Length: 103
Image (cartoon, rainbow, N blue to C red; front, side, top):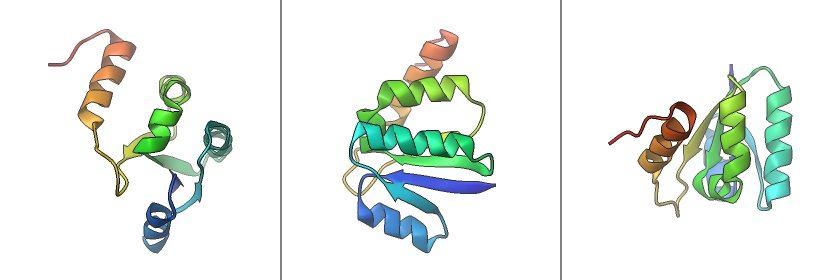
């Protein structure tokens, strides 16, 4: 089981490298989707970490991947500039996937 990071900045990437997590840096939607597609092909990657900014950049694509694939688990992480609206995102995913609104 491996972790993999897709980050929009070098600081987050280097910090994760120090923790033993490999990854890539992406800035454009095409780069993000290409990296995610590579991750989907690698069955050893169990957890995909993506910075908050990139999730916003490719929200619909990432949401579809979360609904269609059991693995890898996609986890949105705040970077040093992030605001971390993770609770709102989880509520939206549950609401869209199951049809239940969490309060």
